[in-house]
Length: 428
Image (cartoon, rainbow, N blue to C red):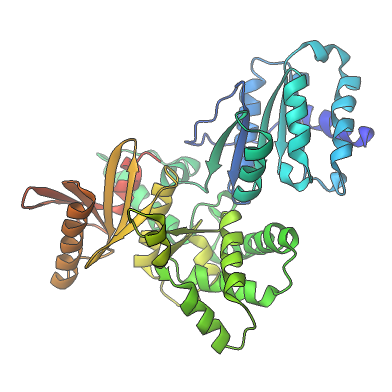
């Protein structure tokens, strides 16, 4: 394997890297820790590595930078034992570098069984800065917890936020400019339906759908079926379709189990639990619990599900007009989830869509595409008022299509804001 690794190392060092946009995620360029980037496939993890390498090349000899993509077909069948050839091959190319700092970037490292043992050894014995990427939260976190405890800094990577989407399209944000606002609102309408996977931007809808369909298949086969040796692939695919079409809704495993069983599927409840877990591990799907004081109470209530990207819903949804209310809610969830993993919904007599604490500040949010109907308006206001009493805050937010302003409910304040504007204001 040495010859293969040497060729890959030199080929990359001689490459001119493609232009990438600056992401909002703040990853340290240098660190005494192992840096890990975790996220769904095709969300831009490699581009972040390229940006880091591009910046390093300004002050570091390119020979001190090694990038390996473990999904390179030339590395198919690589084992833990072969990884020694990577290090030895590099130092045979550059023997003087043993006395210098070397920057190692390993993409999709979880493809190598036992990778964490190798990473720990070279981290402990060599003068290296290590940056890793992976597409499984469970795999990376569990192995890091056991073998790399105290040695890592982990960062989650999502598809483009709306701010990043505008930056990618080179649209300047100036809320005082009518021209800028026109471009922003037009782009938001696209982003809402098509999502933020970088490769889909600027493609027509049929190409976008084909790209996203390929992404789903990649996640299903590489991150779930192959990794967990799934045999009931028909059930898994049906579950994926169900979850993406039903984003922003409550899911009861028991009810879903009964529905699937009545449709002729042979399955057990544990299988459904496992498959949901696999989808979450692959960052395709998220679930949030009800906000309660005990974990047991949280588990007794249904969870609400959300997708990693709005565009994935269109892969399975054959309706002519998108369900904007669900797409709005999913975008709000993603903006919150990119800042904290502790996101909940609140329900007493009425339901409030989101509750979380970010930077010590309580955030209580309802999402309603349109509130022109008086019954809808009253329902949203009443649920926020009840939610504020329950979580103990005096401010909440109602995110809408185009309404803006505030309303007082006793001593409490509820603010209305259009989603596109909130996404630009929100630190995400």
